[in-house]
Length: 458
Image (cartoon, rainbow, N blue to C red; front, side, top):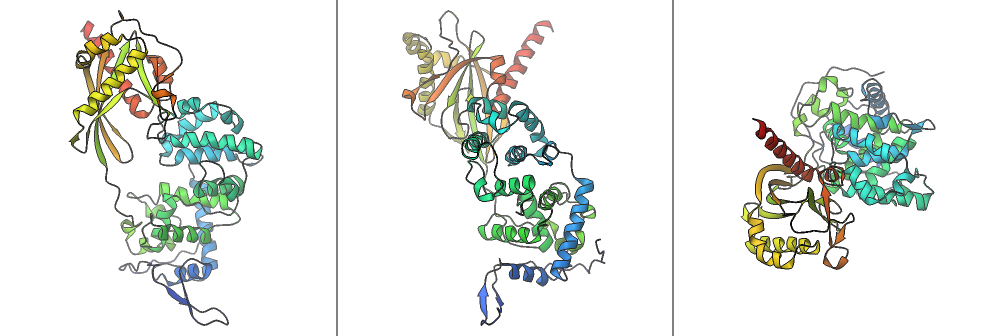
């Protein structure tokens, strides 16, 4: 049962600067300085915070946990990965997939991708036996594609190293590609109820407001403090529910801007609520500056097929099909003309390898690219890049016979960093492994084509 108390008079917050060292006295020892971080230090942190309601630490933590868990039982969102069980426990594979997808991606976006993923890869074995091409097709549009590649490689490791069974030990979990400390703790805790605290951005925000902690949440010092504090507050008996409750609280109530403290189950313990300083926490370093970029995308159409490329590398869009494009500007600075011309010559090399006559390449290179028809422009956001995408279309003459092979061909001598190319029908483009950026390009083209048809009748 939660003990409700009258909130003290609101006052200027006394933030918890744990960078200051304190003096602790150990039995049979002289005074010794040590950093905040161990059990005694955390108890000190709770007791010394003048604005909070922590009295006797162990007793209050139990009440805090009880209040949070009761709220979670009544208010948790019905998310698909919370209702898939295996032998009475959450399916660890499902937890792994959901936690991987939820990194840097909103819940509302993930739900349909999660369902589609499990329909395609219902278990570890089916994922491990698939191909990276197929994995990218199912992931296409979700962004941060390295996650899909590591999930695929991780499944292969689980099958080969652990007999297809996901381990419940965080150290073993971290030996699997793509599983770091956060994901390992999430799988061990949520799937196996192991007593490991899970700390995502939501948890950092809740903790920083609870104790008015003024450390930068992205700093090593700050992250260590929050992780230790989260572990100290963790309900060891109900670790799975507790961790999900903390994340749920941060995602639905203790949100970055539109927080709703009146609905918060742990309001009585919250220092920032009592001092009206919620907006001051968490403390974040200055964000990385966003870059502006303009690119030119070429839709090269031949007999209702589009030329697409795939960079076999680890760059931003590695292993994804894309339409040819060249960068025009970066942060307002124009790319040198010879760089653009070099890329156009590269495209003609690809056309020549498909059967486009070399004499036509020499004769029509400039005239062909000058004939590109603008069909519009779109905006696209990566994490730190804002892109303006200019889209142009050109129809290659069908009088020249090109080879439209079913399989992809490779340029640049076939090395690991080379480019593959292939001709796709419009339907194949929609089903292939392409980024959300390129989906937008295709959608723009389809709208333009539809408008042209309508113009014939009106």
